[in-house]
Length: 106
Image 1 (cartoon, one colour):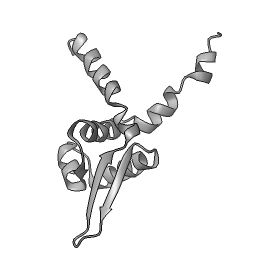
Image 2: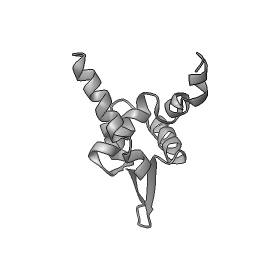
Image 3: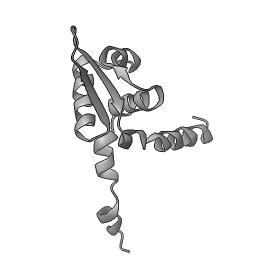
Image 4: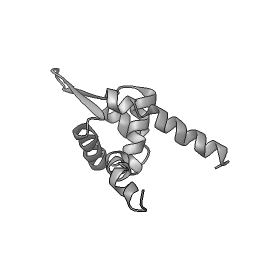
């Protein structure tokens, strides 16, 4: 296998587009480890995220199939967000990153 062949088979750039960045990781971590959340709950729990950025990131995660948005036909309207099965499958990735962090004393 040549030096650049790994670029042809490694999905890392695609994965980083899907889950990369400060906000997507924080949103996914919250939904994976804490469960279903409403928008306001996520906004409070994801420290520092603006309403606009949270909306944008949730839409992107939903489009990539990692987050499910459930709208309830109520007045006032209620919307809940949860990790999909694909989103939940990232739990071991978060656990591995946490272990990597601990092993380095960071």
